[in-house]
Image 1 (cartoon, rainbow, N blue to C red):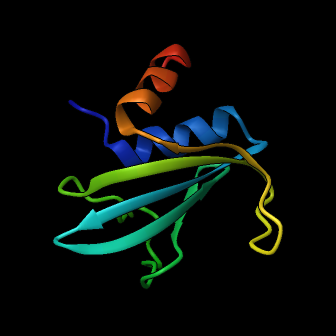
Image 2 (tube, helix red, strand yellow):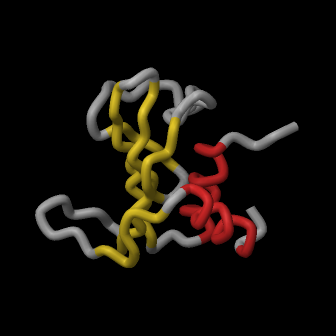
Amino acid sequence: MTVSVGLRLEQYTVQFPRELLLVDIEVNGQPDQIAIFKGFSSSLMCPTAFDPEVPMIPPEAKILGIDRLQGPYNPNSPRYIERKISWEAFEQLLEKAGL
């Protein structure tokens, strides 16, 4: 069984609770930005389902880039660790973390 991208990213933020991820995605031609912090995901552009079991990053989503920030997130003064990481590069971070 393959673990979803969204679940892997949520697990990353559980393992690194001082980091927040901002994930830019595209689903069926529509852009979205997902904030992931301490194991929870929320869309910053679209409605977020009340059920935490509903994945915020569907399997058909194209990941455009991932920003790593110091948490907690303050949109008026974001503290970036690293910006616009490709999915391929971030996947290497996940593998190093055992995710």
